[in-house]
Image (tube, rainbow, N blue to C red; front, side, top):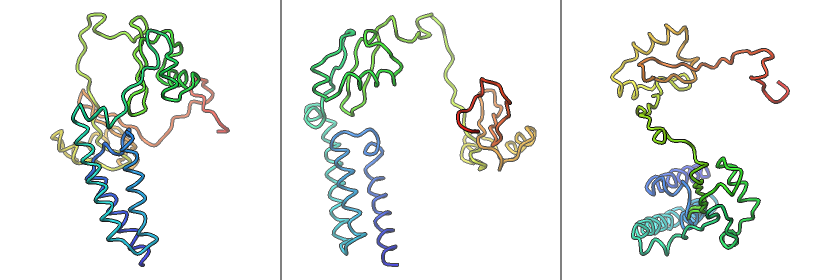
Length: 234
């Protein structure tokens, strides 16, 4: 029971500390973001092995406060360039910057791999590629190779609509129904008209035309249609 009690306390307190810190600390990390997670993890896991829960949690609280101070300081431009690494240019006007690659310790193979991930196969088509301070790579293609935008064709497009989930994994999302000013009776009626049962529905979403799309757990058989080939033994 003592081991369980320690593990429970450590887990709950660690979770609360991360909630207080905010989502930024567990997203794409800067140097001190990563350091913060490593240090906090080591500190809050110590009580599982030794009898210093109070002292360990105090240290963890201090680390949280220090981290939040660093985050606040990083909001000031003059200090931001001290706390964060500046972006590094890797490609400019289609030419690979060898000094930039050397600075970030990246090989040309790795750079080309990152470009392929972004959907680009030829470095000559890149206006600029930059490694940001988070370690991610931003790519700006030359104007002739960027995707066509509706504005290029003088097209007026309607606002993008995001389907709203109403059922996920067989559970009704009442807060979304309430937001749409609908009730369970309406939803159950729509599900019944579709010949489905709530518990068998993987996802049901509310569409722009006020109808619902239902994705159940069943996979349609397509026999030997090559367009539905599935790798593996079956």
